[in-house]
Amino acid sequence: MKIANVAGRATVVTGPGRGVDVASASAGAYGPGLPDLFRQWGRFRAWAAGGTLESPEVTFTPEQLGPPSPRPLQVYAIGLNYRDHAAETGADLPPEPLVFTKFQSSLTGPVTEVTLPTKTVDWEVELTVVIGLDAVNVPEADVWDHVAGLTVGQDISERTLQLTGTPPQFSLAKSYPGFSPTGPYLVTPDELGPADRLEIGCALNGVTVQQSSTSQLIFSVPTLIAKLSAVTPLYPGDLIFTGTPGGVGIARKPPKYLAPGDELISYITGIGQLRQRFVAQEGKP
Image (cartoon, rainbow, N blue to C red; front, side, top):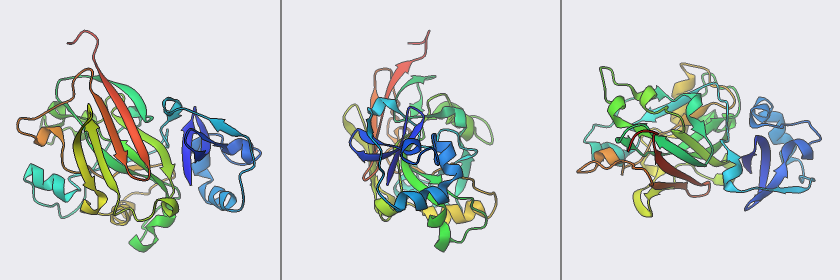
């Protein structure tokens, strides 16, 4: 099942640009928004699996879509979690997940215009997990029971601020307005299949800059959720950005960064794509 946030309303996707409004199809029992759906996720999944969604279809464009989880209580992100990314930076593989946070105010939908605060803003396409049920001390074998679905995320990063100070400012540098686009859909694990063999990548102005597979993950989705939930409860709607593959701008020689007028297309096979266009901050070239 694919679920979209169409102008704030949970919509089961039935085909390209069309779907069924959950609240209408359930006579108000579920929805109307995605946060409402996550609070009832277990019952909703059982209802949705029980029969055909009988309601008139709605149509939508990618520009109308909001983030699949618009108001998560918590947004986690994992650094240096792809073997090819560790290799391009010359770093050793981390013995434990490197965890930081992104802030909710940076979340947007899949098609956006992003203001560049500096000349050192970078791209990081990421497989992003949406939690569906409370997760506390969840063993790896049971993790997928607690996952609502997967989506595409971009962990856009301002590198100067990120690397300033000791310790560096990861969370702030990755949380400017518009720096966390997600979407286009939440795809349930049963539809997507194994999460460790998905093609992931992005293109800048039509030129591929990242192209990899989630088989390159150092810490898998089950491992990440098991380790995080052993420390802090995970709640329905929470997001986990699971890390980026090789090909980021800062690792290039010379480094390459986003500029006004650039267009970035990010994708994961089976989920869909994001499209960001970048503009200069007012008063800056």
